[in-house]
Amino acid sequence: MTEQSRAVDATTTPDATSTPPTSGNPALRKALDAAARILGEDRVLRPENDERATRLLGPNASLFRTRRVAAVLRPATAGQVPELVELFAGDPESGSLHVVSTGRNWGLGSREPADDDAVVLDLGGLDKVRELDLEAGWAVVEPGVTQGHLSRLLAHTPRLVNVTVSAAATSVLGNALDRGVGLRGQRTDDLAGLEVVLPDGETVRVGWWPTEGRTAPVYPHGLGPSPLPLFVQSSLGVVTAAVIRLAPRPEALRVVRLDFPQSALSTATDAVRRWVAQGLTRGVPRIYDPAAARSYGGTEGEFLVHLPVDGTAEAVEALTGILTAEARRSGLFTQVTATEAIDPAHPNHEVARLVERGYAGDPDIADVLFRAKMGVPADRVDADAGFVFFLPLLPFTGADVSRADGLLREAAAATGTRLSATLHLLGPDLIDCVVAMKFPREGDAPERAHRALDLLHTSFADAGFAPYRLDVDHAHRRDALAADPGALALTRRLKAVLDPNNAIAPGRYR
Image (tube, rainbow, N blue to C red; front, top):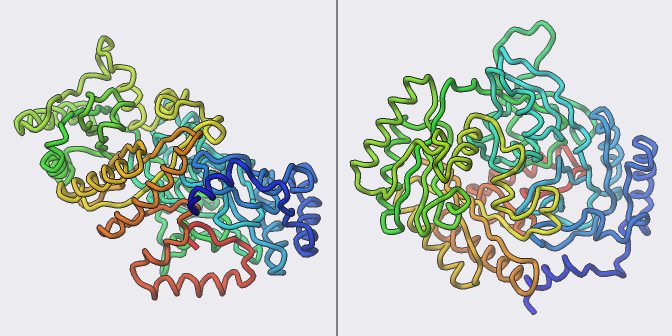
């Protein structure tokens, strides 16, 4: 049996004789007893009160190895978080806190820590939208605020939230802190300010933050060095709230759809790049490979392109005409259309309408597309679905996209795993590639999917395509992928200064 298969087996058959981490650790027991006095015993879940330490978090959709967990803490208010962090800051023997928002980090580990024996700090109960300013375009949200919740508050207003294509019940803040990508752009660009509890329990606000009587426009950088980026993909503090930018809602929006065959991948990609570079499309255009295109009504065996166009009604009409005319003139595309969402008789009408609504800031509240892709509702993903994500960055060139497609095909052929890829076009030079590997949870399918994931990490790194997000089982790759060892050492020096006792657990990015 391989090491990988042992890891997968450990998820489904945890060791019934494992010793709870609290046993024999008086410092940890003392911290958890104090946490119970702060939160109430019903908000402190310990192994002694559950089946065992490997069952506290439940399953994860990727079937990554289930970590032993010392306890789960569930604060009800942001004000309780500094007290909890202080409990773990004073004594290195008391353990470390692994922080989750709603815990729906599907495909990368869900709620799982990177290492064993962490105390999970579950911030899903912090679900307030504290402030909302439609005129200036911002909202102060806590980690448990979902994109469905915030978008409902913004319905029929001149502002929108940059939503992803994931479930409506996913965290806005959690996804932004992990550098997720929405349909309007990278979500890190939505972060204007952060409220952070430092490892010593002090609360600071970095970036731009609303204060009474303040009339200055939203500008996250301030004067001097900006500490805000330090807390993205970071174990330097616990984020309890953020100022999220709210973009103006476009007056009109349409999505141009193009299909093209495998043989045109390189040239079609270069054609789309030109349109992106010249500003003919806005938001985040996407290219789906044939497997990913199925969920969006794509033509069997062909790639699918979505090019969003928005602005005034006249601008949308003009740009739609330009794009469709250029696409037809190129001779690269087997289908060119922009009318699916406005033609109720079109067989792809409902899917196209949901796609356009997503680009306009309205998530699929009923999760129609999400359920079609996953096969299960959001609240059953970790229990019933099986999939992992691989998330590399690519240069936006036809040659590089073709090379990446070849690497995906090689991994699929070598492991017998079903792969699908969606390319998020983040400007004229950069692509965020989302590779999903779905698998049944029975038999050897999980092992084969994990083997495919390992192969992709190796082959893409060899090609110079580094991931921008990591799963819990590949956290160790951060060191090998660091562009500069000196920069990596600098972050560790900052960690040693701010958190000498490791009150906050090293995560997927160490």
